[in-house]
Structures are given as C-alpha cells and as structure tokens.
Length: 215
Image (cartoon, rainbow, N blue to C red; front, side, top):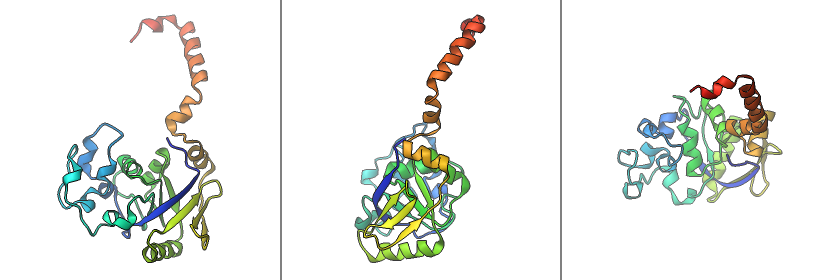
C-alpha cells in the first residue's frame, strides 16, 4: 500500500449525493478475481455511452462528454470532491480499488457509508469528512477556477487551497493515520510481526512434530 503524507492535487467535483458502490464500479466487473485493472471502469455507466464488460477495450468506447471525469479540465485529478453518503450500497471492496487505480488518492465529502469508509483506509485511499458548508465552498471554487487544487496534509490533518486562502481541519483516528503514513494495510501490519510468527511456528512444530506429516 502506498504511503500517504502530503498530497497536492487537482480536484474533480462529483456533484451527486448518495453515490453507491454499483455506480462507482458496476456489478459486472466484480467477476474479476484480480485486484488490478479497475480504474478504466470507474463510474463506467456514467463515463461511457455504451454498456461495459470485463476485458473490453475501453479505448474504442464512446465517452459521455457531459460526465465530469471526461472533461479536459479535470484530467489527472487525484482528489474527488463529493456529496453526502458517498459509497453507499453494497460492501464491495472493488469500489476503493477502482478509485485508487484511476488515480484518486483522497475523497472529500460531508459523509460516507460506513463500510466504504473503512475499506478506503484498508486500500490507501483517504476519505475526508468536512462540514457541508465547507464542501459547498469547495464546489463553488472548483467550478470557478479551472485547475483548482488542494493540498492535503495528513500529518497536520489539514486541507488547504493551493494559494493558502482557506484551510480546513479534518479528523482521523490515530491508528488509521499511522497506517496511512506508513503505507500499512492489514497484511503489512501482520508482516511486521513475521519474526515472531515464524518463531511461534517453529516452537509449535517442535512441540508437536507429528503436524509435519499432516495436510
């Protein structure tokens, strides 16, 4: 998992409330057993004018020119600005995979669905909750100023405009913050104890040698 410290990123606005995980990555793409390749199908039913399927060549598909991520001014965005209850619906972990693999490192919204919120942290994606009044201001700014960027400082827990004209504080638990700063998912945390795990297995096998012949 990639570390998250300070992000200076272009902002893309998704001005829709209650965006569910089936909109983030439609159900047909859940057939894949791989954890890669979901970025091209992020918001598939909104980004494209045809129906997408796994393994399809997306380069030849017709794009929806009205969808925000297809607009030239938002190409390369790494921060998604959204409305309340983002990530509702089913608990598919593919949703943060798709956002991350598209290029987003953070999502800012007034509220998130609980399971999606937790899945973000497990995959190196930072979900930031700000009051609706601050979210409204950011939507106004991103529309008014092409190339609008934000700086997210995780160590200081601050979101700032690139020119420093506004700064907003956000909350994050100490453990989640530690994991993001160090790039540690659940597997990474476990592997930090690899020596202890290995020592336990060796002692356990020495005490129960017949286990070596079992399946």
